[in-house]
Length: 434
Ligand code: FAD
Image 1: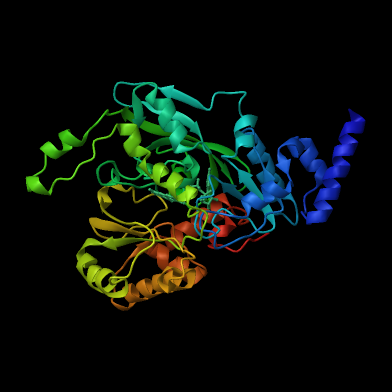
Image 2: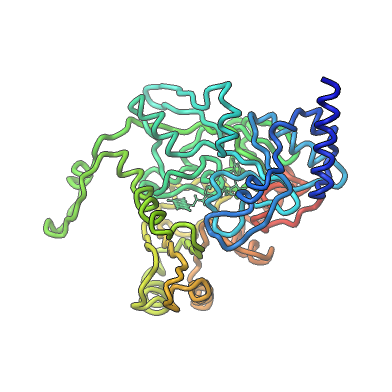
């Protein structure tokens, strides 16, 4: 046993000196993290990329956790070691511009197959069934598709969704988690009862509206800044089989304008995955995605239409869907860290475009990125107070402007829960203060 530990220590020392990670290897050995910590080329490469394919930052190592304790151990080491290192949770890596990457640090692969295998010793999902408030407890790295499939076995399903289900619970709760149901049920962050969170000091805390409520509201929509979500208690409802007819009955409309596709509930929820498979088959999935998601206040949506849809975008061919749907602000808890326009109703306008190598100038990454900048400039110059959803900002001035009145609260929360600025530095909100 002693020889084995000595050998492991030697291997870790060698790896650490190769990559320059400033961690005491004995500390990692004491934590027993040598089995979960990977310096493997393929792991590091995966963690350095995301769906956006526009930013690549290699971490020094990747942790495949088997429990919240592993995460807490790693963060405590980062917090207590004099030189320290950054730590970012990575769900399914579906960010656009490096938000889950960790320069000079460790990425925690919350949803990787190895992390899943490591956790097989305990059930990852447990249900609480009540007449009024059923819920499911899930690991923070669980994908929504797996949550859906497991809860459907009990005739239940979460109330609020994203359009695409191959995203992690922790990743979407760190943003908001929105789709067509959000106007009615609120975003996913409004449909969570309780969380387990590892803070930037390495403490594991349970939080809810009643317990450690500051942390609970900080983490929801908190862009990974205040802690890592290791467990979420998600609100469930009886799963509808099909619901279009019931909904149509309540609406007033011109009958000939109706266009419906009648499919089972699960196929409806998982619809984007079908599009993904088609795009993958054509080699059009792993391409750069200069996406822009904006919340536009209702009072200015006509001006936005005139200036952006009829102006900047005009009749040019687009290389991806554009989604527009309304939101009711009263369904968004203002105590969370997310920001929305200051109006009762606002619209999500999502320009989900891919940069293609098609030879058409209007589909290149430069062209689309430039158009995004034009749109943001137009909104600023004409006083349309949009807020970016899944924000892609670089300077602290931009972040201050983004958070507006909430900026002081965000700074206070950061001081309290991640004072050394260890977490989620890929968001570029706070400089690592190691
Ligand atoms: P990652 O990209 O891995 O991480 C995002 C951020 O959250 C990072 O800062 C990371 O450090 C942090 N983070 C990750 N896990 C945790 C955790 N457990 N605890 C704390 N912080 C954590 N969004 C919607 O709201 N609605 C949609 O319909 C929707 N559709 C999408 C479709 C596609 C094809 C793509 C690519 C994205 C879509 N998104 C949608 C955006 C998506 O919600 C965000 O990109 C989300 O962050 C992705 O989750 P992820 O698990 O891949 O997170």
